[in-house]
Structures are given as C-alpha cells and as structure tokens.
Length: 630
Image (cartoon, rainbow, N blue to C red; front, side, top):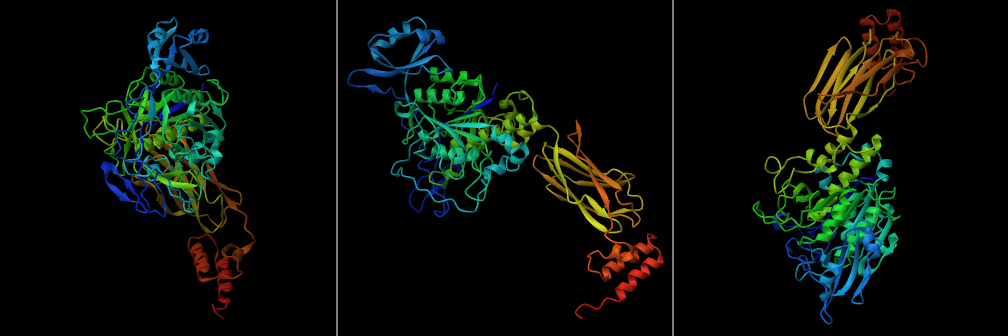
C-alpha cells in the first residue's frame, strides 16, 4: 500500500505587488524592501486575516430558493441505488471513491426529506472556500521576472537541514515519489518545474477534465507551493526541498482563489487515486498537498480527510490568524481534525511568526517568511505564510519516503507524523506548545530514521609510490544524526610513516587523534546528517616497499548504541616508472634533481633507507643541473 501525504494549506500570506516599491511582510507585520529586479511577489497581505468565504457561504439561488448540497450515504451500495424526485438534480460525485457522496442542487425545503431517506447519512451545504484575497487597494495583477542564471537557495532549506539530502536518498528514489498539488494548478511550462508535472486534473467551474494542460495555473499560488516542494536544483531560479519528485497538478481553485467543498472533495479523491482513478495502485500519489480550507467544521470534509488518512499522512497549514496568545485557538480546519499534522510558520529567528495561528492542534513548524519560490512565466517570487510552511513539511516527507523506499523495507517504522515530531528541533517553550508544536521540522534527522547508520566515503589516492611523500585524503559524509566517525589505518606501515594528519570539515565536536599499534586513529564526534569530515594523511612508504603491497584504511560510525563499518579502502604501492635512485627521487619527472628532491634523498640516507652510493648518485645529478634561469 502506498504511503500518502496530504498537506492542506489553509491560508497564505503573500506580500502585495505595488509596482517597483513592492514590500514583503515579515513576522509581526513588519515590512521589508523587495528588490524589484530580483523577484516579484504574489498578491495578498499578512494583514488580510478575514478572507471572504472563510466562514462559509451557502451559495443559494435567491430567485427560487435552491441550494447546492452534497449527500453523504451510509455506504457505496446506498449511493448506487439512490434516486430522488424532480426537485433534486444530481450534479456529480458518483466517481468519488474515498467516500460515498453525491453532489446535488435542491430546493432548500427538500433537505429534511433527503436526510430522512434510507441509506442517507447526512446532507451538507456546499459552501464556498477560498484563499485570502489581496488587501484593500492592492491590484490583484501579478508580474513575473525571468529567472536569472544565479540560483537562490532558500534560507528555509538550510534551517530545516534539507540541503544535502537529495543525493543521499537517491535521485532515482525521488523520481518514484509523486506529489499531487491540489491548488490553483501548476505552471507546467516553467523551466524549473515543468518537466516534473506528469499529470493533471481540473474540477473548477463544475468541470471534470484530465491532463496536465487542463490544470494550468492562472493565479500563481499553486506554482509557488510546488516550487517550495520540488523546484529543480540547477543554476537558475531557486531550489525545492525535494527536487526531482513527480508532480500531479490538481486544480480545485479558480484564478480568483475560490472553490467549493465539492471541488475539494473531488480533488482529494483524484489526488489519492491517481490517473487510473483507483486507490491502492502504483500510480497513487505519495504526497497530496491542498491549498484550501474553512473556519467552519464540516462533516463531509471531515469524512473525506478521515478516509484519506487511511491511505495517507495528512498535513495541514495552521492558518494565518494568530494573535500571539496561547489562550486562544485560531487553527483552521482541516488542521484541527484528528490525525492531521498541523503546520505553523516560522521566521528567520526560528520563532513562529505573528500571523501563524496558535492552538493545541499545532504539531510542528516550518519556515514561512519570505521564502523564494517559483511564479508563472518562468519567474520567481517571495512567498509567506503557513501556505509556505506546509510545503516544506511536504518536501521533508517526500525525502523520507524516498529514503524508506531505498532501504527495501515494506513499510516505514512507525508513522510519518510521529517521526516528524520526534525528530523536530524544539524552538519555543520546552516540549509541545501551542505555537510550534514539537518544534521546527528537521529533514536530516527524519530521513535518518529510514536509513539507519551509514556514511558515504571517498579517497583521493588508491596507490602510493615508494620512497615518496603523498597526501591521502579520506572524505566521509555522514547520513545518520549525532554519530561519531572513526578513521584509522588498520595496520602499521612497517618502516613507513604517517608524517602528519589534518582534519577539516563540519565537525561540531572536538577531534581526537591517537597513535597506537594500528597506526593513526582519528575520531570526530557529534555529527549530523549531511556533515562532511575530511581527514588528510601525509603518507611515506620506504624505498624497498614491495609493489602491490596494500595498506588498508578502515573506519566505523556509531551513535553510542550501534556501530557500522565504513567501506574499506586499500592503498597500494605503485610500480616505479624507472629504476635506480634518479627514478626514485625525480618526483616531478623532469629528468633533474632539485634541492627539495635532494633533501628527501638525504633524509632517507639519514634514516637508513638508502645506502651512501644511492645518495651520491642523486647528489651528482643535482650538482650537474644548471642553475635556474641559465
């Protein structure tokens, strides 16, 4: 069974476009200047905290008293056999597979009679849903600038430790993860994301159309969300949390950011089922991200989310209605529903922003303040709000699923929600709190739960010439959290020597170097996923070292409870290119001996590695070498 993530983005804070003087809204409503030559903001405002339709509207026909409804049945059999009189017109829903529902238009006076029918569970008003609209006086038009050749790495990626994980989980594994963005559509022509959009569906304006071209983005919100998740890692625009994942574009919101409960139901159903329309098959989306919601608890929406959570991990944005008080609860639905991971937004200070909704339902936080992302027409934009925070979590889960699939395990150990909370970094009050929940999501620690103890290792030299000093560099990248790496030569060099050891990299704890009968051991502790340790050894083997003799470098990685062996690397003595002292000491191969090369020969003579006759031969060649410049 596919593991599916449903990320529901309830509200977006996006700085307004106001010509060249556009500003971006920071935490607490503080505005910061935005260079118009770099990016352009989507329309919207952090101050727009009461969007029209957030409390639900009934969409009644005032002329004849009819109303759009959805009818929930006890089971699918009851839906298939249901029939109604002439005052009830079925408008859709028969293909919805998550829950037994029908969409209808009925005279309002008929609702009690419909509810009384056998097999009917409930009748709900098909309310309008929408994202926040631009604040008063701000034009809803959007400008885009062509992406430059200089890629911007969003600060949020570094803050959640996601930047070095793509190669770790494997690009092929990421291509096996599908993210369905249920929103205003995606610009499938954008050069930084278009190749990833492989399918689409459109349920706006009463339509039901399929194919990515049908779900083009005519607002920009869906493209911005998709960019945070999956923008390509190249030399332009920006980069997403999980670049390379496949994308489904599921359009449930029109260009004015409005939709209906029924479009959201159909969009969720299509996203979970995938192109073949059947839940539980290979083309099901692994990640489903929705950008719509309501302040009103809705029974049918709750049923859909509950049904999706049987196949999915549901993630929702907490909303942009915070008042800074832990005594109030502004979290929107469906973030409040049981089993949903509710995401708050943080700023650069790693504290939740002033507009991020607070409440006991908040589970985790992610960056949501002026995040660079994509806009239609090959452009970029800044994106703020819990709508920007939730895609960070979606990307982390995509990385987690890719890492899990790469292990060959049938299922993740434990729930994705529990992993996200257990590996988060606490940022507000100790423990869970109503502002940030468990804390700031941490991609490296979450991914590490799927891969266990492991590290990538490369060595710059695999052969060492006899009677020379060379630098052998061992680079180890850690892919498990808070581990200790030990590097060592596994046996002595005999008459040879390791003349020096240098340790460089992202070590966060002291480095221990120890010499013993096994050679030199270098220990670096306290490393996090993605950190790299570089150990450089200056190695000198004796002149009489046998060609082909091997000297292994070994290592281990441990977290204090378990230990794994790092890949062994064998250093081999090279065959000499010539014979005699000249071939041995002419390191640069120019046919002459310089003062440095003579010094090496003298050192070897002093240590008893070569006889006096060999030193005399080298010295004679040095003496016959014309001075530099002659």
